[in-house]
Amino acid sequence: MVGVRDRGEAIRQYIINNVENHPNDIVALVADEFDISRQAVNVHIKRLVEQKSIIAEGNTRNRKYHLHPLVKDTKSFELSGLEEDRVWRDFIAPNLGALPDNIIDIWHYGFTEMLNNAIDHSQGQHATITIVKNPVYTEIIITDNGLGIFSRICKILKLNDERQAVLELAKGKLTTDPDNHTGEGIFFSSRMFDEYAILSGEVYFSHEYNKPEDWIMERNTPNSGTTVFMKTSNNSERKIKAVFDEFACGEDYGFDKTVVPVSLARYGHERLVSRSQAKRLLARIDRFKIVIFDFEGIDQIGQAFADEVFRVFQNRHPDIQLHFIKTQPNVENMIVRALSRQVDKKA
Image (cartoon, rainbow, N blue to C red; front, side, top):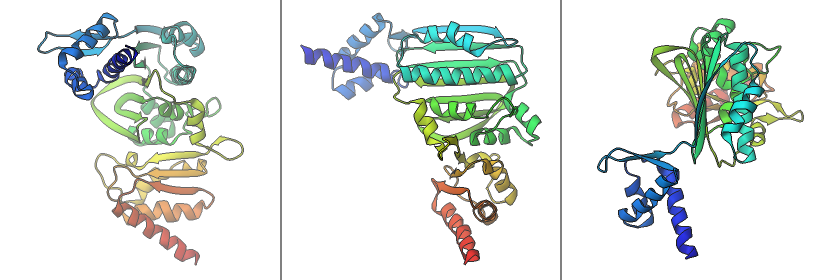
């Protein structure tokens, strides 16, 4: 009987873990995975519905299943005089409930950093916070009615395009208020959650834990203010220290390493061929000791682009370690050519 009970629990847990990605075909998926009949699967689904772990929508023929929210709450706050720790204690922590300590730590860091950004930088009047928790994951959305984070960065740093603001955010150490902020909050928060996104103006910036590249999507209809979306598994083993350790080096445990998604230096589908594009990519990376250029999604670069990054910049900053990853053959050949010219010059 113990074996039968364990198998039943495994089946129900499999349903819970996969139902969001398979709302229409979860019955067939489970039947195939465990080699059982659809009638048997429906018994487990009925039990989960009764337990309020999942919910059913539609008639029998077009039925869909979704995770049942354990918590779904929305509240608005005036930003003037607001303290992020108080919102955490009074609103977020009680709604999170019982979760592993490492997950609570991630939410505490990410939520307070993002709400503080809205308080200190958005120049808005209010923020709306939504928290949704189900048996598998939790998500929090913070929306303010301010100027918009990318627009504000462009204005203060005199950048030409909101997409350039996204590239600078992806590098890290970007702040519009250096006296009071380190510029690390968004960088580290985006890497702690399973999914993290910022929507502002015409640009949507996203980072997913299992997809290490950052990416930009342009919107046809700009929105005002800024929306930050954070989502992570309730049972993730990820820890804050591991995320910080990944980008720390040296005896002072400083934030000295960054990964730069080269694709963010492109506008649309343009080729990365010019020195001006390279200089856009290289802006502010002299603040780091180790820079890793991630070439995911780049199938070709120009000679001038490669030369500016891997010969000209490196010659000017010999103490900075430059590395490259996820290069296709054409890209790697161009990088190796630039590096060989640097070696030849030294020789």
